[in-house]
Image 1 (cartoon, rainbow, N blue to C red):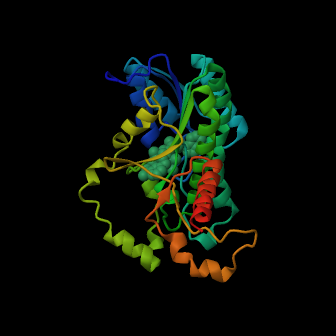
Image 2: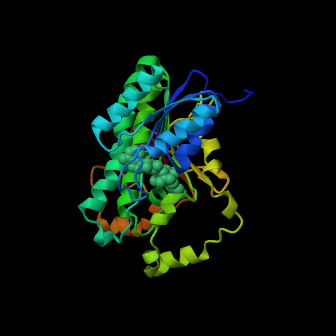
Image 3: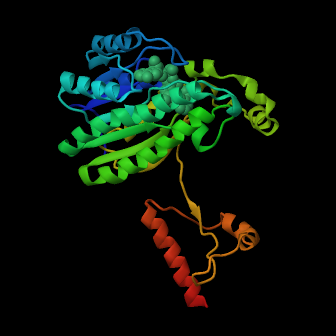
Length: 326
Ligand code: NAD
């Protein structure tokens, strides 16, 4: 299918759209004809304070360019806030077709120092925040038979980053949320994908290099050579993939995608073929598992379950093969 990807007649809710990545998504969806509900609480990179300025500035920019936008200043971090954000989109534009769940901030610290304040704030904004906006939007999409969810994950959760246990725990949860929305939404024309973006944004100001005290991790940081991609670590390099996933043309769902320095990739969750224990109802011993551990970890043969039942089927097929070979 050729031609420009457009969002005419579509209504997008973009959370945290007052700065960084969300701002760029909002401007580009509006430039391509979509109406955008620009949500932003307007706080700092550590999630402190609130202001209308961030959302208003983006709405003004979209309208000045002839686009359609409305502002919402509610926090995603409460159920009432999520409902108010979706209601604002419906009030301004009559429906919701797209949700790009993007609001968030960092409060990094050593794992053992993460208290409830640092944990709850991050779970509230990233995990519950995405849930609270997605749920009322999903009900509308289901009625309309069309929807696109783009949840914002993070390489920190999928691959690992020191001093971000609170952030990674919350972002990791979004993978599960996106998978279930994708499975249930498939009956109603709704897709859901997780995007792991990368950009120099004000979030970087929240990074503390205290994690360099961890030798192995510090080595991976020191060996990281960004020079070939430094000038591509911009929000604009994430927008093409985010908008494709949010578009009608994209039929992909239940996926995890990475945008990083101009490289766009799918990130896969796979299981090794593993070790099938001997037939019968006796469970193997701990020692059996220790003995077979290399085989359990052998990544030369992989499969990719898309549901719990896909995994059962793969296990049952391997057990049948074992029995046939016996
Ligand atoms: P940013 O700070 O520039 O933008 C985030 C926006 O979210 C801010 O405008 C902020 O006011 C808003 N926000 C914060 N709490 C909110 C709340 N409770 N309700 C509504 N809005 C709220 O940061 P960014 O780099 O553009 O990050 C956007 C998203 O991408 C975040 O979820 C972040 O965790 C994720 N992410 C960013 C990177 C990166 O490299 N920048 C990497 C992985 C993931």
